Image: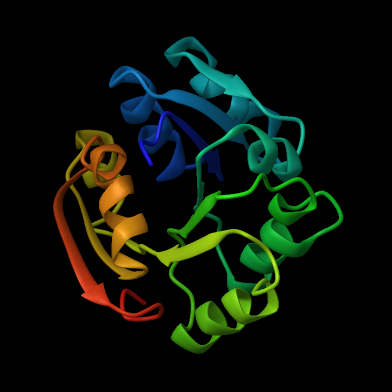
Length: 170
């Protein structure tokens, strides 16, 4: 599967630059954030605004979740207007937030009846690296899905490592 459209949930210090890099590389990018100002800040980069996380699940090949805490990741995925509420078959959901490895595995287990694939790709090196497109990604999950996402990851990361099973990146 070739990734053509990417949704970014969480357009703050890390996700905003990430969305800009993806759009600049020619990916169709849809962004969502609870803060309208964060959505407005990337609009001039060619990032379309989603009304909910559900919109991202239904429109994109890859959804990258970069919110702050385990509970926010769970809400973005499982909430009433979460990704899974509208996820199209074959969607890859990459959790870029730093969460507990056990939480990552629990999230995937809760969605096991859906035709989606989870990856964990916590973003490392901080805000300046995000701006510069030099993030470090240590990923886990299905290697075929990870490899399919690599061209998207390369737009915002200059160090990408696949470490094994889901949770290994966390």
